[in-house]
Image 1 (tube, rainbow, N blue to C red):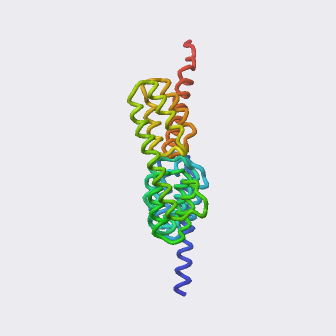
Image 2: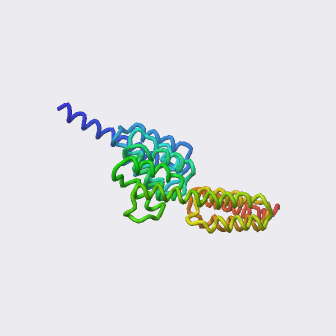
Length: 270
């Protein structure tokens, strides 16, 4: 009887939090109170019952759920945290803070750590390689890290942990030489800047450190260098480049809106 009562109570709580979340979602996207109410509904739900609520948030496509999902990455409910990570991967690009925080979970255990491996592969986070190699090397037949490594390094299925570590080391050595040269060239004139971008653009894949060189070049004093760097950044697959594209699009939209407002003729005064 006591077990049945507990089950009924748990069901009632879950329904109550689902109703509270539904009420929060009735508020407009970006409403000052919406995010707080979403978080209250999630935190009030019992551990082990939050995942469906997170998945419901993810399905809405609202922009204001992203901040809530970010805070759920480290939730005490591991299934809810995993659902938040998966949702953020599907919504990428979001923020570099998501990438950096999720990367720290890779070497952990449980569903959130497994989701973090898949997230790294989805957003092409090459800075997660060392954590993935460490995890794969210390666990036998660890599918989440192995699948992420194969995708990031484009390795065949038969390559084992020794091959992953060697591939990462070889890539690092190759990048160190090329990017050191590119960074030095950026300190020179416009022709040197173009040479630096050409060098970086020839790297395959273009990793995070190479992206930082491009981002620096995108702010170069010479317009030709800036345009060349921005052209490469438009197709660069790294998280930092995706975040740059998102910011650039927002800035263009704001500029267009400002220009449209400025061109509106004032009504004649009678």
